[in-house]
Length: 320
Ligand SMILES: [Zn+2]
Image (cartoon, rainbow, N blue to C red; front, side, top):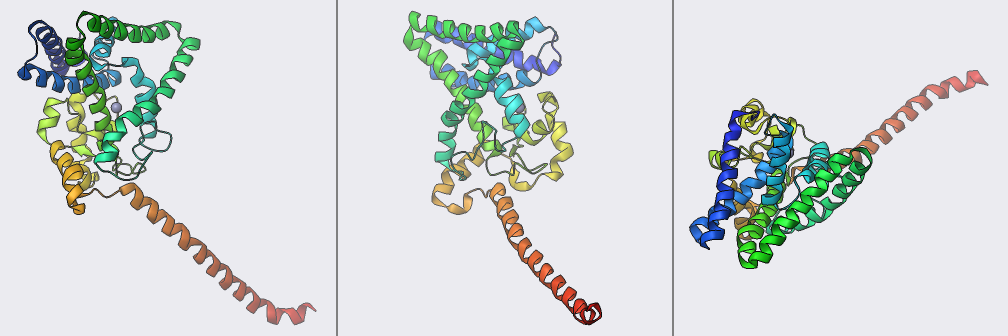
């Protein structure tokens, strides 16, 4: 049985995603089917994220089977969310040491940093995955084999499909998988870039309009998600409403596509549409403060030295 009734929506997405693959494989390419399958690739990535935080089923076997389904359609083993996302990203929240850090290469936020982020971030996420598997080998051999078998299942699924018909396999399996992997990293980037990772409530950019949240399981409410990652996706709008007033307006975007168009395309021509880095603003303020502190300290030392000498001069004859 499902833990949350709302996951009927996730199940419906899984059924339609599977059906679309079968129909496209059987009847060939139609834009009217291909475009929805790409959108569902994005939805699969979001579902993989959600299932990783709050497994859908009460029964563990169903959760393990769901992990396998997600692995095949997401294009990467589902277990990898644990070391890269739960244990690393959620623990560090875009601070130094987060393997998905948004300012690794550049502090800028533009079309080039956005599009180069997914491959760079993917590369750096391989190390925690390897370390996690090494740890499982020592601590939990069953889980180790379950995780390795996700790689095997994925390789067999894609490999057999390529052998049967490589064109169909690329179009209907590999491309939607790559869309899923690319888009989830784009989401991570836009949700954190130029926010302030040290702030309690301004560490994430939120997309609060209805369109994205209805279609993609409330994925826009990212601050609330970071504050309590085990809140089920169906409850994040409520969690966001409670903290909405604590988040600055610049980090509450109504439309995802509106933000993409403004920050990455309009900003190319009109710099006023560029986002301002709250992280850099904080660092600059901290630097200014630390530079002014020694001056204050020095002047305080001078003042107290002067005061001390003023007291000690008349005292000195008595001490002789
Ligand atoms: Zn998360």
